[in-house]
Image (cartoon, rainbow, N blue to C red; front, side, top):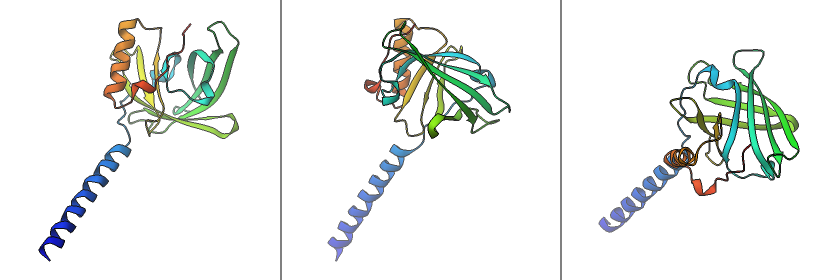
Length: 177
């Protein structure tokens, strides 16, 4: 009897460890507080997780403007096809800051054809010149900056994404304009 309790105890302990690891792995990332000024102007896409929607897109950007309400952001995402001077492709969406008034870091954007993305700001540089956002599951990550970074600054950006727990080997860095 003592052996079966000991075995059951070990099984229970393994189950607790496994469930704890699974809960930690699926925990939502922490966001940082950003001001309303974060959602104004144009951000250049420096790095991103590859996805079907961005195949062939280079020199990407997102432009934010104030919407009709304080928690609404008008979004234009664009890129050039194949080369920085290629044909411009754009898509417009309407964003809603989900945590308006607290951190302002969680925005859900609705695009045409019922496409919706959640963008959470996970890091913003102290000088506000660049930031990292991801979806809540951290399966997609983006690095944005106000201007094209130097190689040294790009390495800092990549290092920060890694520190946030993202596998930076998955990132691509399309040519910028």
